[in-house]
Amino acid sequence: MIYCDYQATTPLAPEARDAMLRWLDGPEGTGFANPHSPHKLGRQANAAIEVARERVAALLPPGGRVIFTGNACEAINLAMRGSGTGGRVSVSAIEHPAVFDTARALGGEHVLNVSKEGQCNTAQDLPADTRLVAVMAVNNEIGTIQPTIDWHRKAKENNALFLIDAVQAYGKVEITQADMIAISAHKFHGPKGVGALWVRDGIELDPQITGGLQEGERSGTLSPALVAGMGAAAKLAHERMAEDREHVGQLWDCARELFADWTLNGSETARYKGNMNIRRDGLDVARLMSECRGVMFSAGSACASGSGKTSRVLKAIGLSDKQAKSSIRLGWGRYTSIEDIEKAAKAINAAARAQGL
Ligand code: PLP
Image 1 (spheres, rainbow, N blue to C red):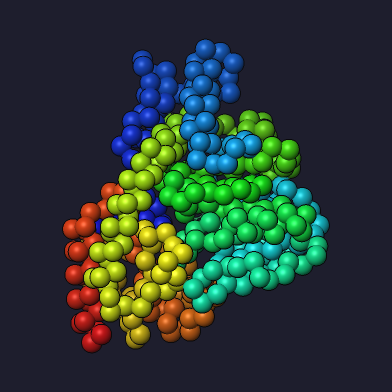
Image 2 (spheres, rainbow, N blue to C red):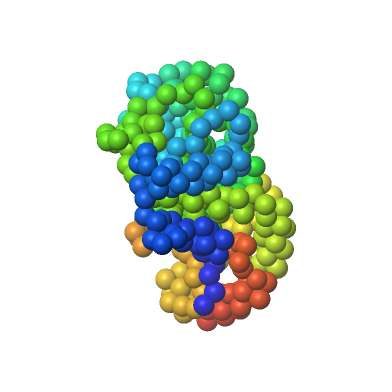
């Protein structure tokens, strides 16, 4: 089995798993405590959460606080719905549904165009009544890196808040200044079921779920195991950032050669190199996938695949329905080897050849 679907989720790091076990079992079964209880066991669990908070914050800009959530969708919803009402929300055309559909649900959304390369540049106007701008750091389908520094500046010029969906960027590329930043542990070798919203000091959010407000603006008992796992994964990502980046670059170079006959969707240069979205005209992706069962990869994005709908992101960069439907997405990272890429390419290219391509 070769796993090439790192944008959907990443393998749990052994270090994150170890950090979690303490809070599942713990010495003499003491790991179960409620981290919000004031007694000794509760305080121990709470201390682990605060260590994780610092570890997560270390890869985010200074001057803000980290609110743990259940995932990035929740963090994004808290950011977009909790940061105010009235005014418009401007979002790039290639945002994840967590942002794009929330903007739609809020009503009156303004969509920012992207180039054929998948770049959302700032040479376009924001409506005067924009209250929030959301532009992601790295796109989940085509891997393009967005000019978030420029968008932050532009949002400030328009007196708007700026949100970065950094789910695919955290631990991989530098995350730049914003008012709010959303991340998800399972995209950087942490566990599923925990994410975070970073909020600049001075910004108040309206809670979207009523309850105990354990995280200030977020209600619900935190899981010390999940949060500690996220913290350990963040620490590891920080320590290994340069090494991981170099490794991912080598895998990219190898894959670009092996898939030289395919057309790349998105930018060749302004990109995260752990994502490769490619197409072959006339390719039957469903057939290809059924003939490559040993390779885990995706048709379009994991969220859109299976729905039968054409990827909104691929259409936004100018692909026809046919071209979008003949595209596949491969993703790799820390635990992928060159041999994995070679085997995956061999299987995929053989299956494409069997289609006469
Ligand atoms: N934003 C991006 C760019 C993503 O890739 C994803 C997940 O695929 C999300 C948001 C949602 O993350 P989560 O699964 O933690 O809710």
